[in-house]
Amino acid sequence: MGNKFYYLAVFAIVCTVVLVASEEEPAKITPGGHRELSGVELEQAIDNLHTTLYEMAAGDGPNFRASKVTKVTTQVVAGTLVTYIAELTKENTETIHQQCIIKIWSQPWLKENATNIQITCEGDDAKLDRTW
Image 1 (spheres, rainbow, N blue to C red):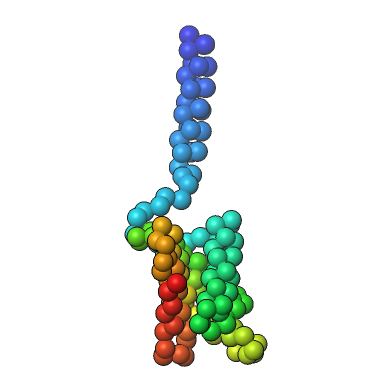
Image 2: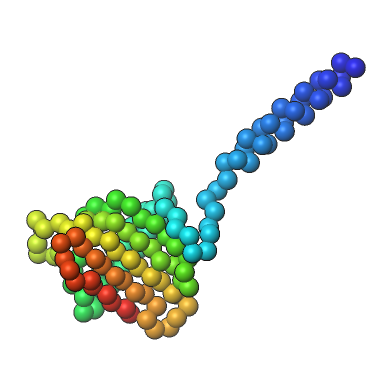
């Protein structure tokens, strides 16, 4: 009888550990749903922001630099839409920092017009919208 209770107690402990561990699920991706980025994903998204701003400046767009990124979310919508809340500085105006919302929509399977960037800044009525 003593062995049965021992094995039953061990079984109960193992089940409890498995149950607790299963509650710590990885981030779920819901199509169309927003998900805030952190860790390595956040670092990669910020690198992508810098690259996209550089590509826009190399084309016909203004030359912005992200000086501080405060929040990044991603959303799966016929591609990937990454939304940044960040301070942007225009090149040659180091003292002017604007709080902006930057949206980068990527559709990497397209051969042309695969990237769209929209920038809306506080105190600025115009919305910048570029596609390449």
